Structures are given as structure tokens and as C-alpha cells.
Image (cartoon, rainbow, N blue to C red; front, top):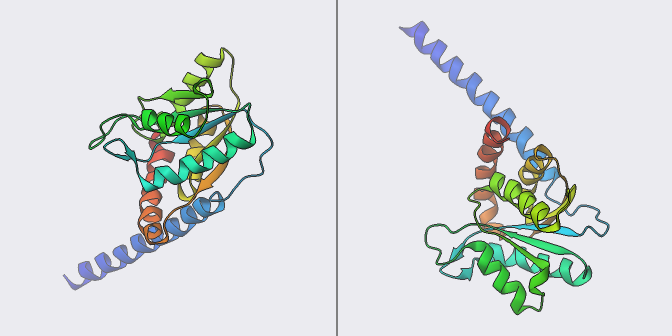
Length: 197
């Protein structure tokens, strides 16, 4: 019995050590992409949804939209895909709310492509690519992705898997939310590596 307990303790320590090493490696990947990429003018940006309260943008989504506005003002030929479906507690789709926000800020409707079916990051990327190619009637190879810094590594990974070269623009994340988001993103990255194609 004593030997069994010792083996169990040893096995538990080994499993914990493997988890700890994997945690720090993956966090390293996440942190390495949580920065602004060097970007020349690229004509297509994709803003990933981040929740609404009724029809109102969450603070996280508002930060993303402000980054999108900066880019759209700077590059008047650029078009934007606003990507996000309608979730629980949301009266309209995230994409619709983002589109309304941009129009109120002076972005012409012709520059906005609404993708309102996606429910996760993989669908954000896949459906946005499909919408872009359908709208523009040509193959799209490069996009700029706007999301929070902690989310960029996974978003760009999924973009690569879907045949896109992507550049990241990170939006602000409230400091008090960072530990929770980075922990959650660790598990999301593992899931995406294994399952999301």
C-alpha cells in the first residue's frame, strides 16, 4: 500500500511538472504574438467579436473597434470585416453592432463587410475569409487581425491553417482581466492545436 501511494505521488508530480512546462512554453508563444506587427498598407482587416450587453459593445469590443477606426482612418482604401454572431444576452449580432458603431464614426457602409454567423475564433477566420472572397470576387491572401494581444497567437495560427498571411494589431486589455484571460487562452490554444483546422 505504501509503495502504491509513493508511486501515485511520484506520478502526480511528473504530471504536474509536464503541465507546468507546457504552460510556460505556450504562454511564451502567446506573449510573443501579443504585439503590433510591422504592417504596410493591407486592404483587408478583420475585427473579431467580443460580446455585447444587449446592443451595446462590451468594453473589450470597444477597444478593438477603436483600433479598427485608427486603421480605417489611416488607410481610406481598406475594408473591414466585422466578425461575430449573436450569443446569449445579445439582442443583435456582434457584427451588426460593430457595423453600426463604424457607420456612426463616419466609415462608409461600402467599406464594411458583415460576417454574423461565427461563434468562435475558428469560425471568425473561416467565415471572414469566405465573405471577403465572395464580396471581392478574388482570392484573398493577406489580412490584418484586430483582437486582444493574448488572442493574437491563436487567431494568427488559425489564419495560417486557412491559407492566410496575417498581421496582428492588439487592442487594450484591462490589467485586472489579464490573469484570467491568459489562463483561459492556454487551454484554448491546446484545443485549437489539436482540433481546429
